[in-house]
Length: 324
Ligand code: ACO
Image (cartoon, rainbow, N blue to C red; front, side, top):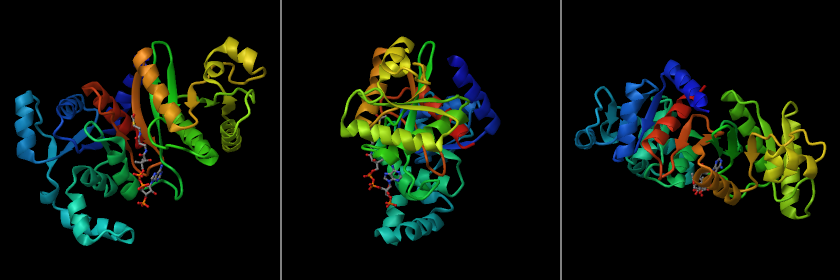
């Protein structure tokens, strides 16, 4: 499975994207940025006070030579961007003064850099909760299509298997239409990463074995997703054991096209998705790469606050490649 990340790294090197990191106060970010620059996975950009960042880097023996470090207040486009932000958010009650204050927040500034095309993507979340990373992107960068919801997925690398889990980080309580959208976007993303998707719409029921409104939601979502993905195997309602184990699938879901070999698992809500990915990561030793956001106009990705330096590098590589 190491080959999967190696291929993405090769692609990232070719693309040479500009990726911005607003959390320059975090030592994992500084160490990751040094690696990203050295290995040429992307052109990293840091947001922060250049003297303070360099001082911290020196203490950590991290070399930031040649890496751009921008302090929002001294950035040449700061005034123009504050006006732009105000124009974009004034109907939501933002004043010009608010826009100036907001833009001094490093996450908002990094978001604006991506929005205005001065960077190709951003990675944050090592020190901020998910909501604080996502909100600026949802407010400023916005979605590909109007009324389309942003969701996320994890690439779960097991010893002998690669699985995609969605949504484990963003949409708390998707309805049937939202759930179908998560499946459709995840299929699109899986294909972008060279994965041939076989989708299981997970439930506590298999092929109607249980009757409950929560099962009906998954059935309805499956019908919508199938309609939108005529060339992809999408099955549900299905329990996770039937989705992943051929002989259990034979028993519980005769005639299944997945045949217990799903590689894209769509969870019915954020409780199940978030708990599942953490269980597989912690108990099965999977490497969990993500959450990778989907549905936004530009690539923005969140880190877990428990992330390692390697996680930051991997998410930056995925961010660089996602802009394709
Ligand atoms: N897709 C598209 N736009 C959205 C979405 C979405 N899924 N959710 C909110 N928005 C938009 C809103 O329309 C709004 O836009 P506007 O201001 O231009 O009108 C803007 O984003 C802000 O919306 P709010 O509802 O005010 O934002 P809120 O902060 O309440 O919700 C958030 C967004 C943060 C993503 C929320 O859904 C959330 O908290 N999700 C769970 C995050 C989380 O805690 N995950 C688990 C941990 S992650 C981990 O373990 C790796």
